[in-house]
Image 1 (tube, rainbow, N blue to C red):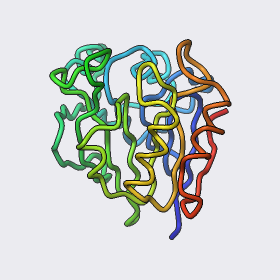
Image 2: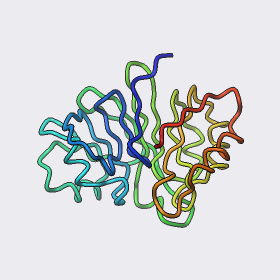
Image 3: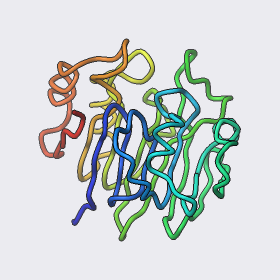
Length: 207
């Protein structure tokens, strides 16, 4: 299986195939090359207006929740408003959504925040968003799984490892750590690797 170019700027700031951005945050360079910008929810480390300005141009389509769209009101770009359990296409990029939430704290299910499954050249890339190990997430089928391991605001490294073993992706990539206060550092990578089935490849992209 051939995976497209994948990068993590930091934390959960992901870029696929060179110009598909998910939750751009703390972006340093003004590339303005985004085909699509996906936003999982409106928290500052996932919806960072200065970073979005650095990656987007007037043809960029934003895919985001309604409350995220309100924070992007200064942008005249086309916006596709999403809720959990929907399918769509933006600038030729196919995607579907699922609910992203915690059990009783920080990210509540009723907020309607999302994770994304993005398809590129027949390969599915799942970005979980800020979430615990939920029943909806356990049912996801994907080739590449970007999974948060930081704890506090998401599942921790051990729970993330258990999730990977349930989903069984072709590749697992840990996210949402080593930057924001309250999340784990590099020790999370070690805990994650210790739980994940040795048959499942892991790729470290967080700087």
